[in-house]
Image 1: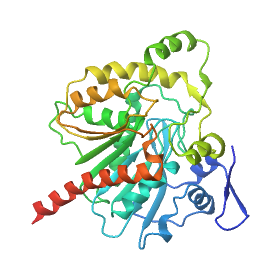
Image 2 (image 1 turned 180 degrees about the horizontal axis):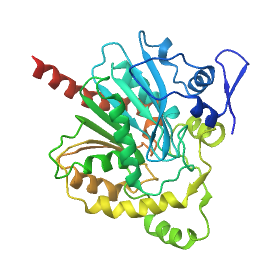
Image 3 (image 1 turned 45 degrees about the horizontal axis):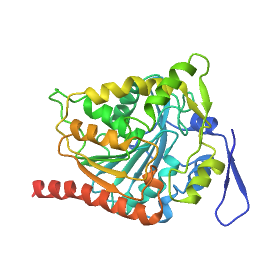
Length: 339
C-alpha cells in the first residue's frame, strides 16, 4: 500500500510505503534524537504532525519497539519546560496521524505528548484492526510507559478515545487490589467503549459468521459532524482499515463481561460523552464506568458524535478546553506540593 502525501504549497508528491517506513525506524528512545528521514517527514506532513514550525524548541521523536509479538510505532512531542506528560491512546480503526488536533492543543498548553499506534493500526504491525484478546493491549501500553520513564516529567496523564478508553481501563483495573501506585494523575475518556450500539444483535451475528469469515467489509459512518473529516477517513486516509475483524469482535465479546463485572477502582476520571454518538452504547456504558471508577465526572455534550477528537472545531475547542482545565488542576497540585 502506497501513501501519497502532497507537500504543502507544491504539486510535488512524496511517496512512502508504511511497512518499509516502520522497518526503517530506529528503536524508540527519548534519550537520543536522530535525523528524521524523508519518508517520516512525508508521513508527518501528510497528517499535520509537523509541529516544529509552530512550537519553538519542540523536540520530536519517532521509533518502534517490539512488544507482545508486535512492532509498535511510537511518537513523542516534548516542548521546552513541559508541565507534565499526556499519553494519547486512539480508538478502533484510528492511528496517531488523525489525532493532530488533540496533540496540538496539548502542546499549546505545554504538555509533552506520547502517542502510539495500537497493534494492527496505523504504522504498527499486526493483522489490520485485529487483536486476539484485549489483554494484549495492556503489555503494549505498559511498555510505552517504561520507554519514557525518567525522560518526561510528572504528572503523567492519559487521554483516550473510544477503544483507547478500553485500553486504559484494562491498565487501571490491573491495579485493583495491588499496592503499586497507578502511574497517572488525570485520565480523560472521550466516548469510551464497553458495548457498541446494537451489541445483542451484532454478538449473535458474530457467532454465526465468525466460523466462516475472518473479516467483513467495513461500513463507514458519519461519526463526526465535520464533513471534511468524514470524507478524509472514507476516501483519502491510506492507513484506514477497510474491514472489520471478526477476531477483534471476538476479543471484545470476551472483554465486555470482564469490564462490566470487575471490582471498582478508586480512581475518578473525566468522561466526555456526546449524546449524538451512534457508535457506542453510551447509555449502557457510562453507568458501568461510574461504577468502575467511583466519583468520575461525566460531561454530556448534546450535539457531539462519536469521534470526539475530530469533531467540528466549535465542539473540539470546548472538549479540549475542558480536558486541559482538568489536567491543569494536577499540575497546580504538584507545584503546591513542591512548595
